Length: 242
Ligand code: GLP
Image (cartoon, rainbow, N blue to C red; front, side):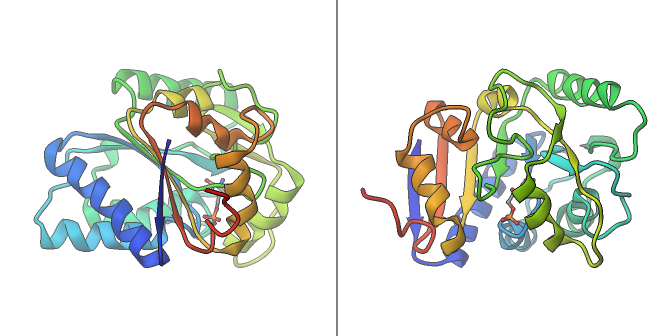
Protein backbone atom coordinates (compact mmCIF):
# COMPACT_ATOMS: atom_id res chain seq x y z
CA UNK A 1 0.00 0.00 0.00
CA UNK A 2 1.38 3.37 -1.02
CA UNK A 3 0.64 6.27 1.30
CA UNK A 4 0.42 9.57 -0.56
CA UNK A 5 0.02 12.59 1.70
CA UNK A 6 -0.99 15.97 0.32
CA UNK A 7 -1.00 19.38 1.98
CA UNK A 8 -4.56 20.04 0.91
CA UNK A 9 -7.78 18.26 -0.02
CA UNK A 10 -7.60 20.01 -3.36
CA UNK A 11 -4.18 18.51 -4.16
CA UNK A 12 -5.40 15.08 -3.11
CA UNK A 13 -8.43 15.45 -5.38
CA UNK A 14 -6.31 16.59 -8.31
CA UNK A 15 -4.08 13.54 -7.91
CA UNK A 16 -7.02 11.11 -7.77
CA UNK A 17 -8.74 12.76 -10.74
CA UNK A 18 -5.54 12.68 -12.79
CA UNK A 19 -5.11 8.97 -12.17
CA UNK A 20 -8.70 8.29 -13.19
CA UNK A 21 -8.54 10.42 -16.36
CA UNK A 22 -5.11 8.99 -17.31
CA UNK A 23 -6.56 5.48 -17.10
CA UNK A 24 -9.52 6.27 -19.34
CA UNK A 25 -7.22 8.10 -21.79
CA UNK A 26 -5.13 4.92 -22.09
CA UNK A 27 -8.01 2.47 -21.87
CA UNK A 28 -11.28 4.05 -23.07
CA UNK A 29 -13.32 0.98 -22.09
CA UNK A 30 -11.92 0.89 -18.53
CA UNK A 31 -14.11 -0.61 -15.81
CA UNK A 32 -14.49 1.68 -12.83
CA UNK A 33 -16.04 1.09 -9.42
CA UNK A 34 -16.82 4.40 -7.75
CA UNK A 35 -17.81 5.54 -4.28
CA UNK A 36 -20.10 8.39 -3.45
CA UNK A 37 -19.95 10.59 -0.34
CA UNK A 38 -18.40 13.93 0.50
CA UNK A 39 -14.80 12.82 0.02
CA UNK A 40 -14.72 12.11 -3.76
CA UNK A 41 -16.94 15.07 -4.70
CA UNK A 42 -14.04 17.37 -5.65
CA UNK A 43 -12.22 14.53 -7.40
CA UNK A 44 -15.24 13.98 -9.63
CA UNK A 45 -15.59 17.71 -10.36
CA UNK A 46 -11.98 17.69 -11.44
CA UNK A 47 -12.45 14.56 -13.55
CA UNK A 48 -15.18 16.35 -15.50
CA UNK A 49 -12.98 19.45 -15.96
CA UNK A 50 -9.95 17.39 -17.03
CA UNK A 51 -11.98 15.23 -19.39
CA UNK A 52 -13.08 18.41 -21.14
CA UNK A 53 -9.72 20.16 -21.26
CA UNK A 54 -7.79 17.01 -22.22
CA UNK A 55 -10.54 15.81 -24.59
CA UNK A 56 -10.76 12.39 -22.95
CA UNK A 57 -13.84 10.47 -24.01
CA UNK A 58 -15.60 8.61 -21.19
CA UNK A 59 -18.45 7.33 -23.34
CA UNK A 60 -16.95 3.84 -23.65
CA UNK A 61 -16.07 3.21 -20.02
CA UNK A 62 -18.18 1.06 -17.71
CA UNK A 63 -19.04 2.00 -14.15
CA UNK A 64 -20.37 0.00 -11.23
CA UNK A 65 -21.47 1.85 -8.10
CA UNK A 66 -19.67 0.83 -4.93
CA UNK A 67 -22.79 0.90 -2.79
CA UNK A 68 -26.36 2.13 -2.27
CA UNK A 69 -28.74 2.84 0.59
CA UNK A 70 -31.42 0.11 0.59
CA UNK A 71 -34.97 1.42 0.30
CA UNK A 72 -33.99 4.93 -0.82
CA UNK A 73 -35.58 5.84 -4.18
CA UNK A 74 -33.17 6.80 -6.98
CA UNK A 75 -34.64 10.30 -7.24
CA UNK A 76 -33.75 11.08 -3.62
CA UNK A 77 -30.75 13.43 -3.83
CA UNK A 78 -29.03 11.50 -1.05
CA UNK A 79 -29.00 8.25 -3.04
CA UNK A 80 -25.80 7.03 -4.65
CA UNK A 81 -27.82 6.79 -7.87
CA UNK A 82 -28.59 10.52 -7.87
CA UNK A 83 -25.05 11.45 -6.80
CA UNK A 84 -23.31 9.51 -9.56
CA UNK A 85 -25.65 10.84 -12.23
CA UNK A 86 -25.16 14.43 -11.10
CA UNK A 87 -21.39 14.36 -10.64
CA UNK A 88 -20.27 11.92 -13.34
CA UNK A 89 -22.72 10.13 -15.58
CA UNK A 90 -24.53 13.19 -16.93
CA UNK A 91 -21.54 15.52 -17.39
CA UNK A 92 -19.34 12.75 -18.84
CA UNK A 93 -22.16 11.40 -21.02
CA UNK A 94 -21.72 7.84 -19.81
CA UNK A 95 -24.34 5.72 -21.46
CA UNK A 96 -26.97 4.03 -19.26
CA UNK A 97 -26.12 0.68 -20.86
CA UNK A 98 -22.62 0.91 -19.35
CA UNK A 99 -23.73 1.73 -15.83
CA UNK A 100 -24.47 -0.81 -13.09
CA UNK A 101 -26.25 0.56 -10.03
CA UNK A 102 -27.87 -1.36 -7.21
CA UNK A 103 -31.66 -1.17 -7.37
CA UNK A 104 -32.34 0.10 -3.86
CA UNK A 105 -36.05 -0.73 -4.16
CA UNK A 106 -35.69 -4.34 -5.26
CA UNK A 107 -37.92 -6.93 -3.61
CA UNK A 108 -35.26 -9.59 -4.22
CA UNK A 109 -31.95 -8.42 -2.73
CA UNK A 110 -30.18 -11.74 -3.37
CA UNK A 111 -31.02 -11.61 -7.08
CA UNK A 112 -29.96 -7.97 -7.21
CA UNK A 113 -26.57 -8.77 -5.68
CA UNK A 114 -26.18 -11.71 -8.06
CA UNK A 115 -26.91 -9.37 -10.98
CA UNK A 116 -24.17 -6.98 -9.86
CA UNK A 117 -21.71 -9.85 -9.32
CA UNK A 118 -22.42 -11.15 -12.82
CA UNK A 119 -21.92 -7.66 -14.26
CA UNK A 120 -18.49 -7.40 -12.63
CA UNK A 121 -17.48 -10.88 -13.81
CA UNK A 122 -18.77 -10.28 -17.32
CA UNK A 123 -16.69 -7.08 -17.48
CA UNK A 124 -13.55 -9.02 -16.51
CA UNK A 125 -13.28 -7.34 -13.12
CA UNK A 126 -12.55 -3.78 -12.07
CA UNK A 127 -9.64 -1.74 -13.43
CA UNK A 128 -9.86 1.10 -10.94
CA UNK A 129 -11.78 1.35 -7.71
CA UNK A 130 -12.10 4.68 -5.89
CA UNK A 131 -13.36 4.37 -2.32
CA UNK A 132 -13.81 6.51 0.76
CA UNK A 133 -13.71 5.33 4.35
CA UNK A 134 -16.21 5.40 7.18
CA UNK A 135 -15.02 6.49 10.61
CA UNK A 136 -15.29 2.82 11.63
CA UNK A 137 -13.11 1.69 8.72
CA UNK A 138 -15.88 0.54 6.43
CA UNK A 139 -15.36 0.45 2.67
CA UNK A 140 -18.65 0.80 0.84
CA UNK A 141 -20.96 -0.85 3.35
CA UNK A 142 -18.49 -3.54 4.32
CA UNK A 143 -18.83 -2.94 8.03
CA UNK A 144 -16.43 -4.16 10.76
CA UNK A 145 -16.55 -7.94 11.13
CA UNK A 146 -17.59 -8.70 7.53
CA UNK A 147 -15.87 -11.62 5.83
CA UNK A 148 -13.19 -10.59 3.37
CA UNK A 149 -14.28 -13.26 0.91
CA UNK A 150 -17.70 -11.69 0.25
CA UNK A 151 -19.00 -10.45 -3.07
CA UNK A 152 -21.89 -7.97 -3.37
CA UNK A 153 -24.36 -8.27 -0.53
CA UNK A 154 -27.00 -6.46 1.47
CA UNK A 155 -25.42 -5.34 4.74
CA UNK A 156 -26.84 -4.36 8.09
CA UNK A 157 -25.47 -0.90 8.68
CA UNK A 158 -23.48 -0.21 11.83
CA UNK A 159 -25.12 2.29 14.20
CA UNK A 160 -22.44 4.90 13.44
CA UNK A 161 -23.08 4.50 9.70
CA UNK A 162 -26.82 5.06 10.20
CA UNK A 163 -26.13 8.22 12.20
CA UNK A 164 -23.42 9.71 9.98
CA UNK A 165 -25.34 8.74 6.83
CA UNK A 166 -28.14 11.19 7.60
CA UNK A 167 -25.81 13.99 6.43
CA UNK A 168 -26.52 13.09 2.81
CA UNK A 169 -30.29 13.53 3.09
CA UNK A 170 -32.33 16.73 3.10
CA UNK A 171 -34.86 15.18 5.49
CA UNK A 172 -34.32 12.30 7.89
CA UNK A 173 -34.75 8.85 6.31
CA UNK A 174 -34.68 5.33 7.74
CA UNK A 175 -31.32 3.81 6.72
CA UNK A 176 -30.78 0.39 8.17
CA UNK A 177 -29.31 -1.62 5.34
CA UNK A 178 -27.09 -0.98 2.37
CA UNK A 179 -26.08 -2.78 -0.80
CA UNK A 180 -22.37 -2.98 -1.35
CA UNK A 181 -19.73 -4.49 -3.57
CA UNK A 182 -17.86 -7.01 -1.40
CA UNK A 183 -14.32 -7.04 -0.09
CA UNK A 184 -13.33 -9.92 -2.36
CA UNK A 185 -14.11 -7.60 -5.28
CA UNK A 186 -12.26 -4.73 -3.57
CA UNK A 187 -9.21 -6.98 -3.16
CA UNK A 188 -9.45 -8.07 -6.82
CA UNK A 189 -9.53 -4.54 -8.27
CA UNK A 190 -6.45 -3.99 -10.40
CA UNK A 191 -5.91 -0.54 -8.83
CA UNK A 192 -7.43 0.58 -5.55
CA UNK A 193 -7.47 4.18 -4.29
CA UNK A 194 -8.78 5.09 -0.84
CA UNK A 195 -9.36 8.83 -0.34
CA UNK A 196 -9.67 10.46 3.07
CA UNK A 197 -9.46 14.05 4.23
CA UNK A 198 -10.00 16.06 7.36
CA UNK A 199 -9.39 15.53 11.08
CA UNK A 200 -12.44 13.28 11.57
CA UNK A 201 -10.69 10.59 9.54
CA UNK A 202 -7.30 10.86 11.29
CA UNK A 203 -7.83 8.07 13.85
CA UNK A 204 -9.24 5.54 11.36
CA UNK A 205 -6.42 6.37 8.96
CA UNK A 206 -3.93 5.63 11.74
CA UNK A 207 -5.63 2.26 12.35
CA UNK A 208 -5.78 1.55 8.62
CA UNK A 209 -2.08 2.21 8.11
CA UNK A 210 -0.60 1.15 11.42
CA UNK A 211 -3.13 -0.99 13.31
CA UNK A 212 -3.68 -4.72 13.22
CA UNK A 213 -4.77 -6.08 9.83
CA UNK A 214 -8.12 -7.86 10.08
CA UNK A 215 -11.87 -7.89 9.72
CA UNK A 216 -12.49 -5.45 12.59
CA UNK A 217 -11.04 -2.67 10.42
CA UNK A 218 -12.12 -3.53 6.85
CA UNK A 219 -9.93 -0.79 5.35
CA UNK A 220 -6.80 -2.68 6.45
CA UNK A 221 -7.48 -4.87 3.41
CA UNK A 222 -5.57 -2.20 1.46
CA UNK A 223 -2.36 -3.36 3.12
CA UNK A 224 -2.75 -6.79 1.54
CA UNK A 225 -3.50 -5.36 -1.90
CA UNK A 226 -0.60 -5.35 -4.38
CA UNK A 227 -1.58 -2.06 -6.05
CA UNK A 228 -3.39 0.12 -3.54
CA UNK A 229 -2.85 3.69 -2.42
CA UNK A 230 -4.07 5.72 0.50
CA UNK A 231 -4.55 9.33 -0.63
CA UNK A 232 -4.81 11.55 2.43
CA UNK A 233 -4.54 15.21 3.28
CA UNK A 234 -2.36 16.47 6.12
CA UNK A 235 -5.28 16.55 8.58
CA UNK A 236 -6.19 12.90 7.92
CA UNK A 237 -2.48 12.02 8.17
CA UNK A 238 -1.96 13.90 11.44
CA UNK A 239 -1.94 10.83 13.74
CA UNK A 240 0.40 8.68 11.65
CA UNK A 241 3.72 7.81 13.27
CA UNK A 242 5.70 7.37 10.10
C1 GLP B 1 -20.49 6.13 3.43
C2 GLP B 1 -20.44 5.25 2.17
C3 GLP B 1 -19.05 5.04 1.69
C4 GLP B 1 -18.29 6.32 1.83
C5 GLP B 1 -18.06 6.55 3.31
C6 GLP B 1 -17.39 7.87 3.61
O1 GLP B 1 -21.30 5.59 4.40
N1 GLP B 1 -21.07 3.98 2.31
O2 GLP B 1 -19.04 4.56 0.37
O3 GLP B 1 -17.07 6.21 1.15
O4 GLP B 1 -19.23 6.38 4.05
O5 GLP B 1 -18.22 8.96 3.31
P1 GLP B 1 -17.72 10.45 3.25
O6 GLP B 1 -16.84 10.56 2.07
O7 GLP B 1 -18.97 11.28 3.11
O8 GLP B 1 -16.96 10.71 4.52
